[in-house]
Amino acid sequence: MRGSVRAFFAVLLLALFPFFVLALGVGGVVAGLTIGHRAGMYVAILAAGMMLALGLALAQALRTRLEPPSGPVLTRQEQPGLWRLVDEHAAQAQTRSPDEIVLVGEINAAVREDARALGLKEGKRYMMIGLPLLAGLNVTELRSVLAHELGHYGGGHTRLLAVSYRGAETLGLTVSRLDSGPARWILGAYAWLYAVVSRSANRAQELQAAAYSVAAAGSEAAASALRKIATMDLLWEAYGERFLGLPSLAGRTPDILLGFRNFLDHPQQRRIVAEIEPKVLDNQPSSLFDSHPTIRRRIEKIGAMPAPPARPDQRPAWTVLADPARVVPAAEARLYIKGELGPRASWSEIVRIAGAASAARGAELLAGAGRESRAAPGGTLGELLAAIQHGRIDQLMSPLLEDGGNPEQAREGLVELLGDVIVCALIAQRRAHHELSWGGGRLITGPQGELKVTELVAPAVRNPALVPQFAQRLTALGVRMDFVRRPTAAPPRPAHPAGGAEPQLVGVAPEVMAFKKNWDVLVFDAGLLLVPLKAGKLAGQSLAGAVGQGGHAQRKRVTGLLELGQAELFGQPGVRWLPTGTVLGGDRKKFLTGGGKIALRFAGGETATLRTQHDGGYESLTRFLDTVPRGQPVGSR
Image: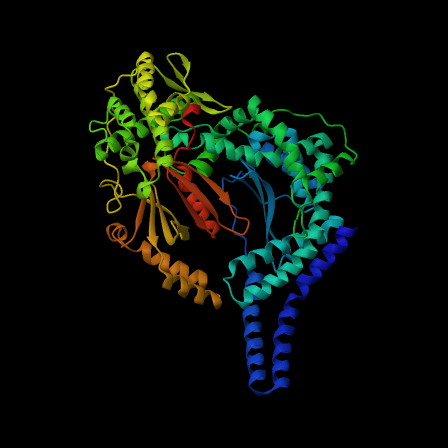
């Protein structure tokens, strides 16, 4: 009942919003006329302007339409089994079924409604199911999740809650579409007030929705699904860091979901989950603006609910799909691969090919640096070791380091690249190969079993006096001192980044901070092009933002760049080209306030951090990061 009362006040706030706009404008004009003189005139003009701006914002809110979720649509004709489940749970929740079920790439399940009139009028409903959930959950847990999501739109006493839920979606979307300026500030303040009231109702709704999940699957499965989802984000990120960069390097197409299931089932991941799950549940933050109670709170409520007898179905959730062997790979291709990688292959084959390619690339880089720096003119392993023994590490690594780097960076980079040379030499003689390890990523099996390359190489790099002993050990392993891996192509240069072949533009990240400067970053399939962003252009955009046109100014600037030909674009003064071939991996972090950062690691040990406050730009940068191999310690390959 308390949830319905809160929802009533939330809906009342929605209905009063037009009157708030009118009262603000008319009240300000009347106040200005009462004050009189020049000050009163300013107040009246400001109030009229505010009313006009808010009126336009209100008109936009009333006609706001949700963008349909992007992803494969599962139709009733193609997936009758899944739709039977959804219809069954919709009937239990006394609500209508969604109009579309869409697979999405995130660890999430949700319902959305393209409601109108600030959420007061119903619209087309969508249910989104995160593809990774089909691997991470079993069938019973999936039933629990579906029933919970449909509970958000349950009928009867939750009718007002459904309206407040739609209103929150619509109002939040309207604010997000406005540029900075008075209209956004005032509407944002109203949305803040609405959020305080409506989120309380939403939290009550979450607990009511939990009752539907328990009725559908039992309390044990409902609680298990919540616990799994709480940690699955971390595991999906770890899986991506270790494995999802390998297929593009190998030129092979993987079974992504099957790999994730194997990754989750490995004892190492099970141990990690057992350790971190209590910390994740205990440290989950909560505030007035949360639409969900904490997972710990929800699990406690679930445990206290009466549960019907339930027969658990432990099969992977993807078995509810008709023909999953066809549907799942097609969904993976659309959501994650987005291009032609090559023939389908097992993960073991992908790891073997990608490991060899990664080692070859590192070996090529070091051989090229040896020739360019003249520290190892022929680029052979023997010459590289001689350069180390005679204290010429800084000279050897100088072509690969930004602004000369520093001695510690040079040594760290050399350890990794020299390890690549050794692995590449052994692979060339078929005396070593990379093996798949779902617990750690990649292992190198050499002539004497597992080869921990970092432990083998690091002592000699850090203490040149150990180089002769190191060389003897390499000879015993069968590594030839005259081995050299010659580059297959010259490294790309900024003026002509792809050695004659035009790189293809795949994304844009405007207003990125990197190397202590502001840039517009163009994301190509062959690398990142950083175009300097002058202070005057930023100031102009800020001025445009004051009247709500900041986004327009940014789009106009980026469009101007995209209209340039590639020769002119790469010839712009001050541009900086970061080719994919020199990137060894990186990390990412999403900002709660929008945007995020990626930290790239380059051959030679140097790093670069790119920061953006825009979600779209952050997504473009992370897609670029997904195309390069994930940097792993050499010994774990």
